[in-house]
Structures are given as structure tokens and as C-alpha cells.
Image (cartoon, rainbow, N blue to C red; front, side, top):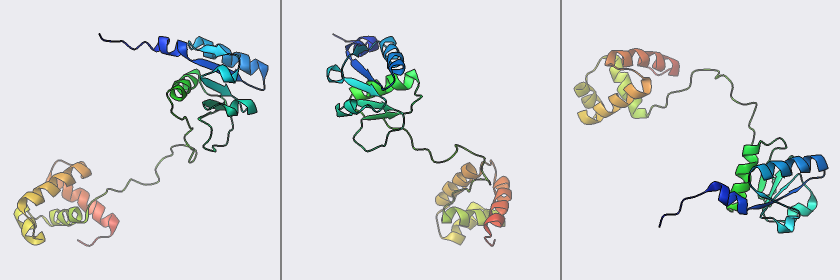
Length: 188
């Protein structure tokens, strides 16, 4: 017999208590929780998960989602912003009910900005040597002899350079290589 997962049936069993110091916010959150298909519990002790804005009595519960400015002391199971969306609150309830923790990503700046310069290509030292040889106009056999490696290895490095430099020919690789080597101040 195959059992199908019914997310509404799963959420209907969860009891969620809403505790807030603001009665209007508490009513709005309770309405949001009920609209998500959860059972609204009157007390934290009767709930599977508690949503709180930092009310002290809620913090005694093992599965609390704190909305707002909360210090991440590692003790609180869930922390969301004060203006969390219904989808974020629903996901947090499900996560806590499953025994997971919910944390905000730490903000590391004002978001993504434009890069100041073109990103550096990550070439291995051997790829730099092969690129220098391509700039000199050497073929695979001559490169293999110069670097004391097999022709197969040279072919591998040339293909890797083509991918990294986003080129399709040895000539294009040599042209891009000249520009890169000039920027890197590597003597050719």
C-alpha cells in the first residue's frame, strides 16, 4: 500500500500559539496561522510551535519562532524578521515542527554591487606555463617537450584553458593570453 503525503493534513495536526505584547498584532498573526491550516492554541504549553515577538513566557517553549530583533543566543529555535512574510512564517513553523532551526542570513553589506574590476581567472601554474607556450606559438608536441610532460597532458591543459578563457581556438587563446599575461605582469 502506498501512502500519499497530504501537506494540509500534516499542518492541521500542528498547534501553534501566538504570543505578542500587541493584541492587534497577536490577532493578525493568529489569523495568518489559521489561514495556513494550523490549529491556533491559546497557550504556549498546549502548542507544538510558538510564534512570539519576544514575550518572556514563550521563550520557555522548546520550539519558538521569535519575530523581530532577537539576539541569536543559540537557545531560540527560530528567528525571523519582524516583517516576515506568510510564506516565511509557514516554512519556519514546518521546520521547527520537524526539529530544525531557523535563522536569518547575516547581512554582510548593502547587497550585491558592481564589480570594481573584471574577476580574476583562476589558472593553475601549469596552465600559465602552457598559456605562455601558446602565446609563443608552440604546438602540443613542442609544449610537451619544453615542459617535460606528455602530449595528452598538454591537450588536457589546452582544453581547460579554452574553457576558462571562453575561446574556441589556439589563436583566440593566445590573444586572450597576451592580455592576461600583460595584466598579471608575467614575462613571456
